[in-house]
Image (cartoon, rainbow, N blue to C red; front, side):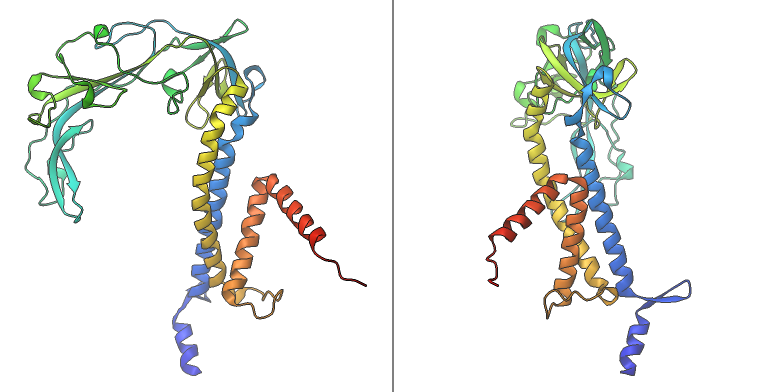
Length: 358
């Protein structure tokens, strides 16, 4: 018995003169991290869905999502590579065929050549993985050009917005696409690449024929450069934009400005399927955080009151019940529908259970 006590004492931490067991420390850390992460995840999800309660632009405040329905107006813009046209944004990128650090499946470091927007100096690579290779820099630094005149008009009033912040990931009305060849202004980069070289949204223009990609025949020479071009064209019709109001400007909601054809109801309907998919995938981290809460309570079992609802409950089951109750309470705070569903289920079970005859 004495040996056991000495062993336990060796596993204790001395915190401000107070001895605390390792299990309590581990349990507290695990519980704090799991509950904190679950709260953060639920807060983020609740914020991302708050757009459903958006109000018209003129009624909005800095913290309230707002929407505007109307037609979009812009003036023509162009760049050094693309002629002026009705574009909301022009996305230009420059790449160089240079050495890059890579790791094999066997976790071995090595160097390889590839097209990259951010070339690295091989002298910074780990030892034995390409140090001494030449460093090829880009001669151009291109960026997205956003149309500064873009605005949406409703009731005769213009509300400005940044077109580069539009949510184009779902492709509702606005989607980046390749510029037509006749609208290019070819200069130093004058070799138009094959369509299959890149995705459907970007057009590649190479420095010369020697730099063009044809992996079946050759690879580009080191130091070759190319530019990739994509444009966000103006669309006709009525659209709804959703974000936050900032004076007479609409700024992003959750990093992007939501957009859909038609009115606000069309926008909510359009994003509802995406919300369902997002909610489904968020259930996986929530499940693992529930397991973390369970584990935290299990570590703290020495300091927890025994649950005597069912005789013979093990420590694992007691911790599981506490974790389940904690998770349900947290979920109820963020989603009142859980409360309605839980009360309905309890009521259903109560009235369906056979009553004892007096």
